[in-house]
Length: 196
Image 1 (cartoon, helix red, strand yellow):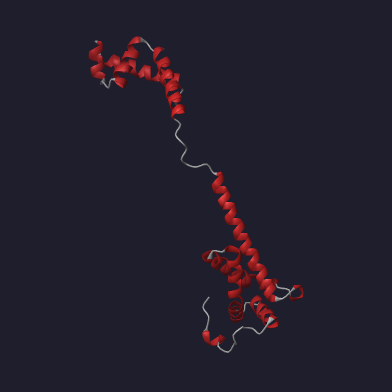
Image 2 (tube, one colour):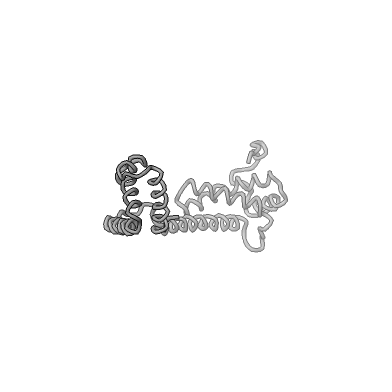
């Protein structure tokens, strides 16, 4: 918030002149008086940052918490009740609560990260070998359910890499027949393997 240095030049160091002065400044802040809030800011900013640093130990987070506290003072100054305590105690209570909330938030975030399993799962060679073996057995079983011409066509095309024309030439059947048999074979394999 921009402040006019001249408007604060007549204040002595230490600011408002004690609890009564700070209480009056909070009352002015509650009415929306920006000058009163600037004086409150000057009076409490350093102690607020100090308590935040004692709780958080991190300068950057302490400054963030201090900004949040000062904003809260601006928004909620009307809630200050002089009958319940001094204005500085009210401000320090706000600062301490906000700093503790930040510590808890950081701790909960760290706990959530620890609970989430790592994106990198260890490679298990045995499990991979078993899974591959089971898949190969399923494919063999499904291939054995095909007709001989279908099985030979699929084997030559997919395992040996031949084209439809080459498969037809090797099997001595028309290319159209090979295409039809392979299409039927792939449909049966898909159904057998449960592929969608």
